[in-house]
Length: 270
Ligand SMILES: Nc1ncnc2c1ncn2[C@@H]1O[C@H](COP(=O)(O)OP(=O)(O)O)[C@@H](O)[C@H]1O
Ligand SMILES: [Mg+2]
Image 1 (tube, protein in one colour):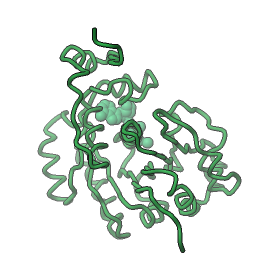
Image 2: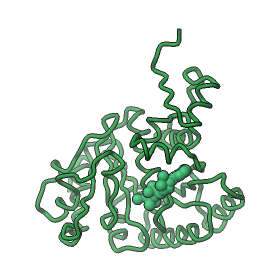
Image 3: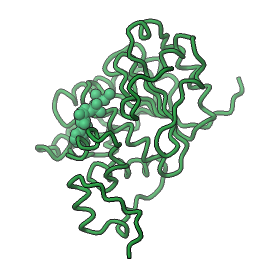
């Protein structure tokens, strides 16, 4: 079978919900789009879809569920997000969930592969049949965990499942660090799970504020601690060296950014 396939496909997984998978995933996608890459993000958390919400779409008319049910073509489920990013949201209805056939994701990915530099998939949570299928077609897997025992134990389970299907596990993203003794957690995670920590993203009040303001963090607060960690990870994925823009953000702007003020540095500094 001959097809031009260019996009690198990343699957982002977590062992349990609420660890920040969608938050980190969507901001990572925006950070990649900001660097000029063609990005498509797909909500494959078919049971608990909330990617649309992140991009301000409460009830998208056509979703990945319609595509997987065979009732709409993929082109109609693609929406435009910030910085030219394209997103494919999920739908909320139970009937839609029941009608969707997850195995259609293989065709979806095949269809999209020559339309982006990176395809990021917000994967299902926990042990799930859909994961095994996705694992067989993606190029990379990243597991998100918070630095606590339960989340890490679930992340370890996910790693074992992923390995049984033999994809490359790039490593783990540790989210909401800097809370308590996370250095030990990082060491434990690296040693016992033999998972490379790709990024440690600090707990950051601006994540919450960005959510309330409905503006993604890397746009509203590009210099806040979590944003910097996410932008570093984006640079790592594209093989670019991350250089924080110290010219644009002086000390005062940095502090204001960290406190949650919208410091737009586009104004001319004079
Ligand atoms: N680094 C962070 N600092 C502070 N709050 C965070 C951080 N990451 C995620 N959150 C918060 O955690 C909650 C769960 O995030 P979400 O992305 O929905 O998780 P998941 O997709 O894993 O269920 C949200 O309220 C989000 O604002
Ligand atoms: Mg989520």
